[in-house]
Picture (tube, rainbow, N blue to C red):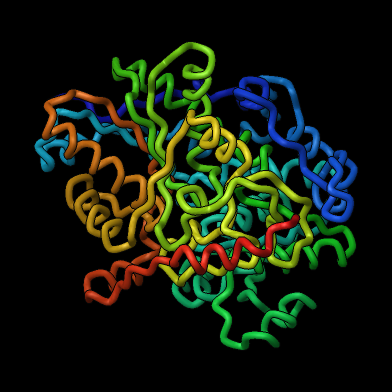
Length: 450
């Protein structure tokens, strides 16, 4: 029997985060002041983030040291396993090799804790007493709740209302670690009140929840805001995933022809992909990088590459990104972590420069492939993660047709044991495939700043 697990020891835990900014095909377009349309400096973010994180956001250093205090906590679950899905390969009858980096083994059940620990550490250093944030499916809120408890910081999470209702156990997990969880839109903020006045039945969106969390942060004492995806420093912290995976693929005696991950804001996929992307940008590797999104929220495949706000209330600076428009409210699909109107600037630029490509799936196809993966490998994937699995299975099936012995690597970004309500709906035949028309998307894009 071939080896199925490729494990690293504590000595192999990365000691630095990899910063892709110096290696990009061209520099990122700078954030702009919404009023003047002029580039903003780091000081403009000081009300929201500690200066250490702001410096990481714009750093030109290729490697950034991981603080010892963060490494000590990482060692609770890192390095994470790389697994080869041999049983899935056999079930598909494919000559392809399928590997997955298992980030579900973290205390929060997903990759999100990699940046939650780092961000909370820097906030603690800066004297922050309280952190506000948003969460979609609840994976980010769970991770930040755990990290805040570790550093004795109060945490308030604005959870997108449809996920608050669909995923009660993620809500409970956050509360176990002392977080206050608020369904968004809420009556606690002026913006939430405005949204509810216009639409009392609003199911919420990440854009709305971000606005509420930011408003709370800037109007409260000793409070900072924390974001679980999109920004450069968040993607930076996740690169421990790809750095470990490179060493593990060497142990497996293979190098990926395809690197696949689901994308909502882009953090988990960036974490796996960027250390390998360096080999493509600087070493000429021909690896294909495939970002997978829901057809209900197709920011890359149907959105526009333009400057836009990161939140619905237009509190953030203007960021160059693939976007569906900051007023876009996606349908209530079960992959709550992928229901975001925009995409990380780094991922957006790599797609625009043709270094990376994107595909989109309906949730019925996603859950069908998730069931197949679970039956073969014994682990139930989160709905978000299942998007990456669906794309990997399709490539493996194509390899069966062509006979090509390709190597596929995907990020198993989180488990689905708090998402069984979604699986109940799938098994009962109640999942609906929703897809916004191009007309609806164009209408949302009319809100883009001129």
